[in-house]
Structures are given as C-alpha cells and as structure tokens.
Length: 128
Image (cartoon, rainbow, N blue to C red):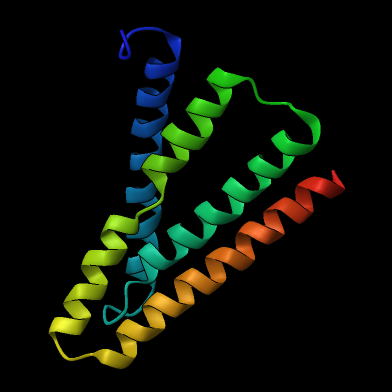
C-alpha cells in the first residue's frame, strides 16, 4: 500500500526530525528577539526555503538525490521544518489584533525573502 515501504518511512522520519528542528530553532530565535513579531517562524521559513532551493538546485544539476533521499529531505525534513501553517495563524492573529502593518510585513517579508532565499540556494548549488 501507499503507507508501506522505504519512502513513507523516510518521510515520517524526516518529518519528525524537521519538526523538532523547527521547534528548537524557532524557540531559540524567539527567546533572542522581540515577542511582538514572530521572528522564529520568519527565520525558519526563510532558512527552509534556502535549504530547499539548494537541494532542488543540486538535484536538478547533478541528479544526486534518489527518490528515497528526495522524499526524506524535501517532503519529510523540510516539510516538517517549514511552518507555513504557523505563519498563517500568526498573521491571522496580527490581523485580528488590528496590527495591519505587522501582518503586511510578515506576509510580504516571508514571501519575498523566501523567494530570494530559494533563488540563492539554487544559485549556490549551481556553483558547487
């Protein structure tokens, strides 16, 4: 079935590692920054986009990732690591609280920097 085999197990293990990594990094960033903006989620999303872009770029250029490695890294690890559901919830809270400027900064900043980080990851991978 669809949930048996190496690939689903790889996704599950990667997801667990990614989720724990997100929790630890976002928490560390949150403790070091202001409580009035979700910097932890912001950093995790941009970093996740950078790493995803680099891995995508490497796999596109050199075909270094087989199906199991792609599933583990891209779907599992980075899928568990990035936090767009948290991003949406935090943005909703800012909107609900009337913090329109912060909500706009959160949306435009994460999307724009995420795209730039993804592009940078692909560019770095192409140099390797």
